[in-house]
Length: 204
Ligand SMILES: Nc1nc2c(ncn2[C@@H]2O[C@H](COP(=O)(O)OP(=O)(O)OP(=O)(O)O)[C@@H](O)[C@H]2O)c(=O)[nH]1
Ligand SMILES: [Mg+2]
Image (cartoon, rainbow, N blue to C red; front, side, top):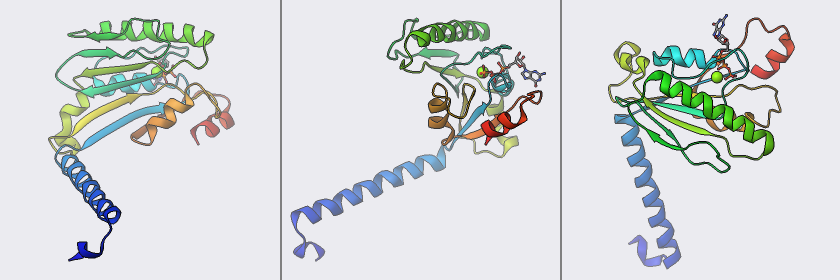
């Protein structure tokens, strides 16, 4: 009955609306059976983000150092595999690809070498695309879903982010901003930082 007075354009619009509703419903259905939990370690430079992420993972797969270490984004997805993928990004001079059955130190060494190579390239080209690391790994915390009160099908991801150096940090700022909105953030800061005002500004 509705259709009798509708133009072709209006009919099309209504149909599009139904398709969107169907897509939203399918998304919610998937979310309900396989909810996603993403934790992101974020905070100031050299504040212990990667050390904390390694603790949650249960193995030291992320490089950490006294001086600035992390560059780009490391995404660790809970899996029974031990696989690392470094996708081809614009300006990449480092080895890209997928490596399987790695040890924790294999991953850490490759991440460290690639982060160092990225920093060298970044000095020459400020507009280089941030490096990405996709790690599939058994995350210790994800094996304790019951204790955490999480549904069995929960998909577990940890994002280890680079540090925020300054409020207008043009290097790491965009990577951090693009990812924290989608995650439950664990904020790390260096309790020994002497410039308390700077620290507070950054954390804010
Ligand atoms: N005293 C102390 N040192 C820590 C702690 N957590 C990490 N560290 C040390 O702090 C230094 C920096 O640690 P990282 O985990 O690399 O810090 P990060 O925040 O990931 O650093 P970037 O990613 O480079 O910004 C390393 O030397 C760690 O061993 C802590 O809880 N206490
Ligand atoms: Mg780090």
